[in-house]
Image (cartoon, rainbow, N blue to C red; front, top):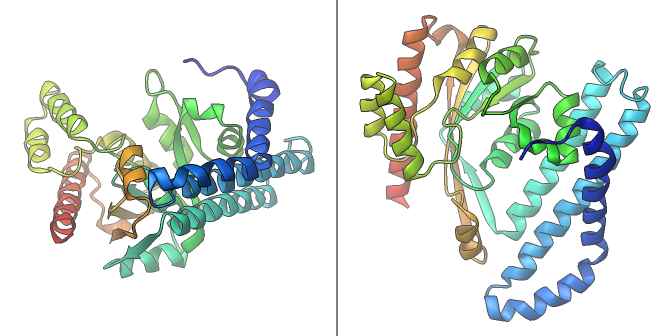
Length: 334
């Protein structure tokens, strides 16, 4: 589906989404009664838990969308949205939204997030002395929220993201994605590497570029397609390494290398996690029980990042193999 132009998104889509969110909040008492009646049939009060998460999300979404409207007026109807003061204000809105949704989901889904063996990475992220390029495993519903919360709320970073063009249909993502230094790309026709490089060049010391090199959530089918893509491209050595990795897909180096090239002074943080549900069905099944999500980060200083492109690709694959080994160990321990 082609994303409609800006006037349609602002004058038609945004009001409809806003009204839908308000309706969910206003109807929440009635919806709560229905969920309570259905809960004994579903077990574990799942419907009530899901409804509470949805209502909290809707309320925050409405509040932040209206806050963005107020900021648009305050910055001269968008003319000064790029000023330092307005950038801080928009990041504050994003931080409040991400932090609130994260806490709500963690509490209602009974999730405990544990960060282990990551002291060097955490110190580098919290120091704000240098920008960082964050390269994360992508596997499970909500892992983007998990990593964003770490960067925004735990470490006070200002993340920059590459967003799918279709996300412009969400007015809050559309506005914050446009006013903050993010990039929307269409994988079917956009030049993602160019956009990532442009997004990264002027990054400040408290900035962080977040990239998921696998491109999409891990599945065995996507892993196999990644191997076949490497083989068709004549990258036999990389395909062989990808076959050795069973818990992650082969990384696509283009975006990561574009960010590293645009900010050679940036440190690098690799992120892996286990315990994030892999789909809606698994999320529903696990909802009543206590859950643990484990997060592991590896820090690489800017001076230790290879400069040659071929060496960078080999280095990235080797780091991804380390992530694969860690994931396998944690899954085995679990």
